[in-house]
Image (cartoon, rainbow, N blue to C red; front, side, top):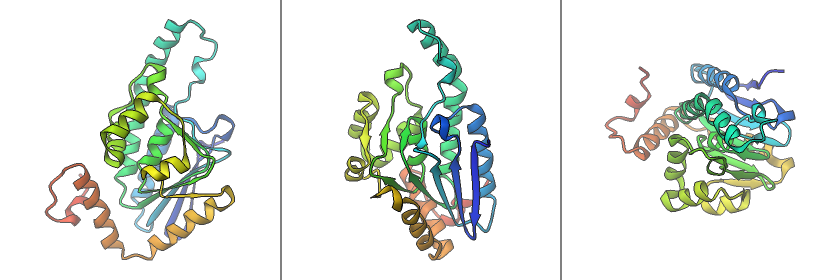
Length: 239
């Protein structure tokens, strides 16, 4: 079974995490596949909007920790976690940045758990719609590892340093309604309405003037990261 499903309907693409039996976790292979798929969307001139969602009852449960099963000694477990996490965490940050910098407008349709790197992927999207029972948290500090800088930066951009410290250091679990009040979720809907709500938003965005929408997104991203903007269209030039 592929780790992702990529479907296209006219100018709207949908990327679906597709390992529901494991709650759609991230490992090196999954992240490399996701990066390739995001590049294919980026390079498709017909694509205007990308929706990202999960199969089953999870959006993305973060790091795949299945390799740690059977390790009961705390010190050994910690060493194993750090050893197997180095490349995965750097890839998670890299893929989140690719997702954030897409020219296409992106919508996270969050159907359940969004944990660690999974929550980070949703934060990298332009819009976030979540079902009411969706649950979010960053477990990294409890696991003894720091959250990657890209994850910290995404939160800082959206909620500022005080909330970012609360979310990362306390490792609290948040429901969608609470994050809606904090500005991290744009819309909370019943489970049965998630697909329709995301598609309705996608279709409204497709109807916008493409150049104006694309350049506006690029300008906002650049200004958020304190880059100097002279001409918005120059922000879209690829190296």
